[in-house]
Image (cartoon, rainbow, N blue to C red):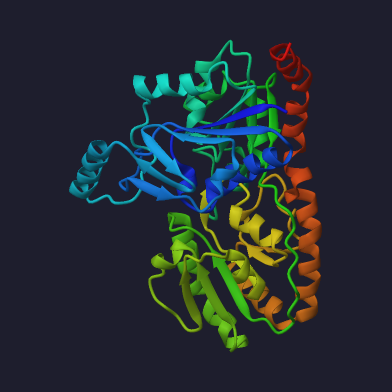
Length: 409
């Protein structure tokens, strides 16, 4: 058993989905493997105005979940720095910017760094620096711990439907990220395209691919289902994508399938500009599995975004749901990896046609539903997602066991 500490400079677990889903899935896997898993969150004010959050994730299952200047009760975290949050809230209101801004407060102050060091140094076998915390890797140079940079989405590497194929797959890694990654022992990318770009910059460094692993959630096939589901938070790419779909593609789908209904699930429902025919703005739900259970298929009509396999695409496949997505939703290095589970197209007419075909042809939909299981096993099962990082931690076990044995002599 290894002691693994996840370090975050922002409480990602305060929101559902996205980066939080990625890191919680990995941490939960480590718990299932018998490891001692801890979380260290150094600043819950960064990009936030609310002085508390109730995590939608079971953070109590970890050995510890410590947030600086805060107290935790079960899944609720409450800041003890009321003055700091008051000033933060006043600043946000004055600027008219009420949305979380993770680009603000980029520099970790001395007190924050000292707290992180006190929580982590000499206390971990594995230190996983999550997302923005990769900038802290130099703190642990010379440490006996294995330091893993977990950047998730690498900024600057963007996809767009108006980009050339070369631009889609060869965007450079920003210099500041290269500096951040250089002090870590391992860099864990979310997709093969990022991993390839990282290996070209760090040919001697250990580069892994760590995706979002999950158990396959088989759903009962319903040949008469007519719901199309789009799931997402209220981000720019999600807002643009769903409004583009409703405006340019959904009318054609409804003309051919009068009973078809589009269900917009998650905070992105707030961004739908014009409620169209047969559209349900569901918003946030407590049980996403119920939405996938009733859905005939899922869509990901994104026109721009970062180089990555989108969580919404992986999630739909994990629930056995056929998917229609643009190329922005898949790994540029493997554009046909989801063919067994659905269709990939950047053409609005083709996109609408694929949605219509899946709704009207139950045999095709059954084939893609069965294909989702195969795709999941190849790319999103726990074995496929975590075997590489598991092997690196497994290699530490003789040393870890030696330390444990010496402590009990």
